[in-house]
Image 1 (cartoon, protein in one colour):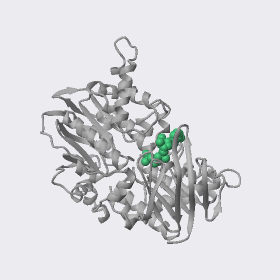
Image 2 (image 1 turned 90 degrees about the horizontal axis):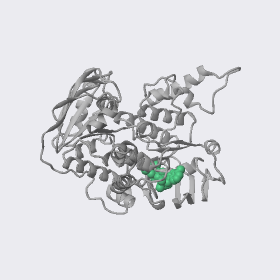
Image 3 (image 1 turned 60 degrees about the horizontal axis):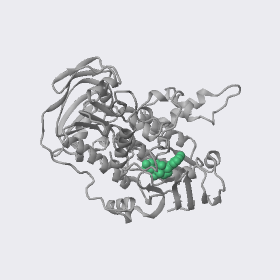
Image 4 (image 1 turned 180 degrees about the vertical axis):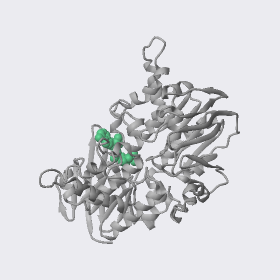
Length: 512
Ligand SMILES: Nc1ncnc2c1ncn2[C@@H]1O[C@H](COP(=O)(O)OP(=O)(O)OP(=O)(O)O)[C@@H](O)[C@H]1O
Ligand SMILES: [Mg+2]
């Protein structure tokens, strides 16, 4: 391993009443990929935000390439060679890809900005990543996975020597992840040090040289990746043993609750037919862009349907808006929590109460505060949402805890059909298990549960039945207890294979 390039010692940081970091240390070497691990709220993002000048520390020292920095700002950190890809993507949705990449460091021509040069450069880095995005596209129109790739392209373009990736893969497909890993390895060979934060522990074996583990704002341990096992990593992260990572409960299959017939909506929802039964969980697998999210959105009434029928308990129902769906007892916990799932400007209490106003508000129209307290308390407790108070703004929660609020607000109401889109994205191992338990609870209570997930181990471990989509169509329906990752991937790349496009790389996929 190369020279030490980053040394952080005795770092502490408090946010009004929350000790986010308490005497933490971290050391990064040239050419090292360090996995920074810990549960939701452990302080990982806070630590790397200090290194990248986003937050100022309360105490401790930071040395980058041997130089001590008293006060890092985003600019001085960037000049020192630090680039960060944030967990919560923060790009300007109304600007183009190119404008976002060069924000604050635009290339100037003689009179005006040199757009052609910026676009050319943006294209160069996007090509290098192998992503099909044009520099002129407006960022807000792109899915999360593409937005993530733009952030990565941006980091490449500033020639960072220290690259921080705060959950870069949480929204990527297996193919994109492989591209990303290829780039990580290349950066590493060029001497770049990389701090890699991820809750997808399966992927570490492909890239991690070392691990640093934090818990509750404290440094726990660090060492070479090869000296740890999955079990020891998890134990250090959660401070206890987790017996079963994918607890599946066996229930008797009940009657049909929900049926979708010949549903069409847009380009990615084509002739979708499936049913959901009491006592089972159905997992939707497929590559990004297969139409899984679009299917849930069309059912929930977010996007218009062009044709098709939806039956609830045998009766056809009309869903033209999310309100229709919620009234009928069908709910959706969406994928893009920042855009669709969470109001970061509201408190946790308000976020949980908002979709449940019908049950909180009595006939008189006055809110039943006790009922609201009860709902919030239940959500916070059942999902172990880490916060000193539900009166805090949702924005102050760690990424994973925000996700728990998105899921939690639906779990507290009585629904008939619950659809989750990537419910455990960005959630730590312990909390994932809590969400699985909740899904199992719903299943045991006769609620039809379906979830979209890009993590195959999770689909295989939690679902009873797996529906695979490719290019807007259902290409396979499998028994989760009998199938394999490879079989799922075969259906997920069905049309690509027919067109001879798919590389062998998509076939074997064990990290997502
Ligand atoms: N801006 C803020 N204001 C108040 N509290 C904050 C703020 N940012 C973080 N915190 C708190 O600091 C603690 C550490 O949060 P941090 O985001 O660093 O966790 P994390 O390890 O990145 O978790 P995750 O895996 O969920 O992303 C949490 O308790 C969080 O609520
Ligand atoms: Mg974080």
